[in-house]
Figure (cartoon, rainbow, N blue to C red):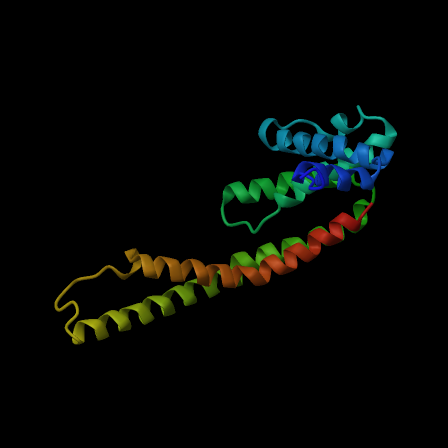
Length: 194
């Protein structure tokens, strides 16, 4: 029995083989979450991220800024409502405040704004058309069911049916996925800007 090692002993042996973390890893572990916390506070309390960033030593700033950027980028989403629009503006302003290459950033923002405009205009039209087509399809299915005697003479509100709602959510997700793919690409471009 003494030859068998516990799971804890095996795990400790593996951890022992990893070695000590580097100074950079330790800075990252400590200051990326700090940057994330500050960015979250920016959305809640409207704190000044540039002023907060200036409080850190030079070797820490990179990691704090990285954490901030992660949260700010997550808050850039398709402008489906006024809250999303407000968060987009705030996130984009904050990123611009902490990045040095403002011209490259503005070029990416122009592409993002085009996506947002297209989503609001043509995307809205696409959603309306898709909604009407889905509604007609469900209406046809219900009429067929009524003809087969499953629900004779019943008045059914198609739009309130769970199956309709679920299909509509899938349709919207599919339509928005094209926009989100481009938006994700532009977010990666933002990460590459200094």
